Amino acid sequence: MKTILWATLTANGNYAQSSPDNPPKKEALDDFATHAKAAGNFIVGRRTFEGMRGNGGGGPFGEIDIVVVSKNAAEIPGVTVVKSPQEALNYLQQKGYRTALISGGADIHNSFLGQGLVDEAIFNVAPVLEGKGLNLLIDKDNYRYKHVQLLDCKPLGNGVVQLRYAIER
Image 1 (cartoon, helix red, strand yellow):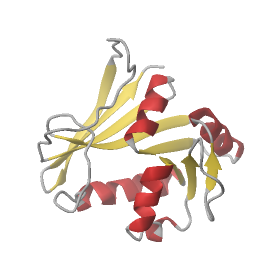
Image 2 (image 1 turned 135 degrees about the horizontal axis):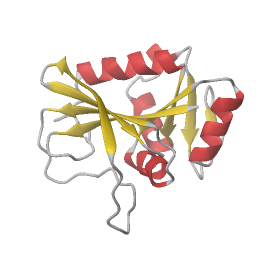
Image 3 (image 1 turned 120 degrees about the vertical axis):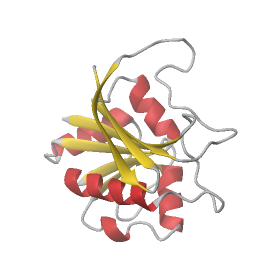
Image 4 (image 1 turned 45 degrees about the vertical axis):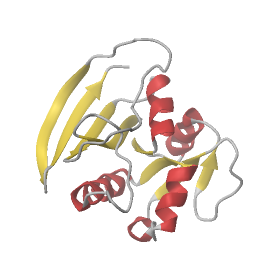
């Protein structure tokens, strides 16, 4: 199964943090919806999922298989809850999916990256600089490198640029 990590980054490379002063760009959200519909699923952390739900999330995702990764969460109506990234991938593979979309937040992204479970990364770079932010990491403790191959680069509009990379496993 192909795994695609989808994220929005700031122009200075931080993992973009949404707030009332800095809402997500419509172009990035529309792109995410397109990728989620194409995959038929997405994997998300519990806090990010709760944030989506709190903002009326789920509307365009009624037909999409949502998998929430949480070590502590109990059952959440309408979604599948698993305890690890590998368990999320196993669930989607058993359901016959050919692609898994990993959508957020930073802890989930870093967990999948750190375990070497990502085949491709899609980064939507938002036109904003952020003072203090979170980073995407392949290793929290060491200076390790992983070379990637640029597959595509395109503007999405409103200053958002999308970079798509292949990641060697």
